[in-house]
Length: 511
Ligand code: XMP
Picture 1: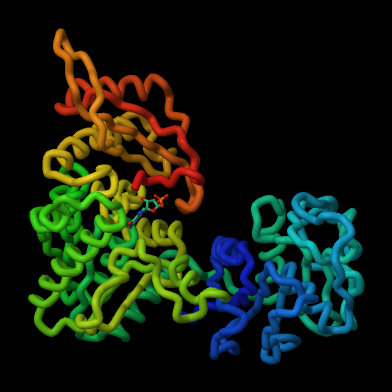
Picture 2 (picture 1 turned 180 degrees about the vertical axis):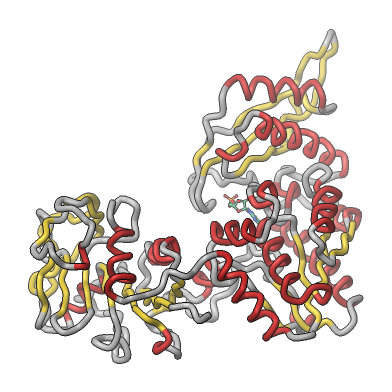
């Protein structure tokens, strides 16, 4: 079945991804494209949304989209900058606002019978974020709504299914924003709400089959959600032609390699576990600088992966667990289509000589959609709900140089902390948690003995995307119990501290 598609033209707004999120929540498929790199197949999109922008239509660098295939030809919703753009270049007037127009405002309707505002009540709270305002509407426009400070808060163009709004329906503070998007997309544009995890699985499996055929595909599994879901999808499509490689870099959590490998095998994946711990430890010997560690770990991974991939005869594809935010980032308005994948990305730096074609089954979906897709394919909820874990693993949680003994200590500490969170029902209310082994010894007393041993720091944060984060107010009783357990059970540790720093300024990892 062909999915209806919605096009979001991005003018660089910080909220563009949120528009896509809200649209997807309505079970509608959408794609974000930079206004200056619109897709070639615009006729395939059933409706278009123009995003906001940090730019002004009055400045020198006005962002000019080519709307010739859109305006008047298909339903269009212009948000913030989009609404100002339409006004400015179609006979209206845009000028700086007299009052600051940020944050809360309330709608009052001029035309309350419009489908556009169906099921939205007078006074509905909307969120504003703009410094220009529309003084005069464009030609043939009809005013739909105002707020106290913004007269032209919503308008439509006579004879077109074109709507424009000054406020941001995509942010949660616009209370009826989702309803408004539904009114526009479903009731006005007639877009079908058929984008579900099951439909995604069906269409993705079909397109992988078509793309890859009988070729062989290699994929690096990390134990994380994205690579696992990508593997299960590919497995559904091509079965044993998918060759998964799960590398133990020796910096995983306690027993993780063994347990996750068994789990992968239980899921029917064609997976090979490669224990390369010694190779990584050797590459890391004496390295103390965090970025050098990342490089050493990254390079060792490439070497191991490459060795393994070469053992698979005639492999022609490399599968990756890239997800939509990475894609959007690399084709952003400012970044342009050639901007590179961030250095955080574990397998982004694979060398050219591998010369493999790339298949990325998750490149059009967001993280929470990855989880929903995983759930719809029956992947264990515990695996899907795992905290994020950095590619370099415990290597960037052992401050200073890394030795096998330090890894052992940190694995024990981490296991007590993480298992404790699970046992006390706290794990799912924390976005990410872990322990750091500090490069200092402190004096302690155990029995009648003076000790001089390691300090560990526990960190638990709440976040939505890792970009900003705050420390979690874990119950004192839990911290007390955990600290006792660590000091009593992990030889080499005599002091536990809890990190109470937010990000920014402190990052989540200590290195
Ligand atoms: P920071 O420490 O920058 O971390 O606040 C934000 C998120 O990114 C993860 N992280 C990494 N992930 N390779 C990765 O794959 C890395 O080098 C890396 N460094 C940090 C971190 O665990 C958190 O989720």
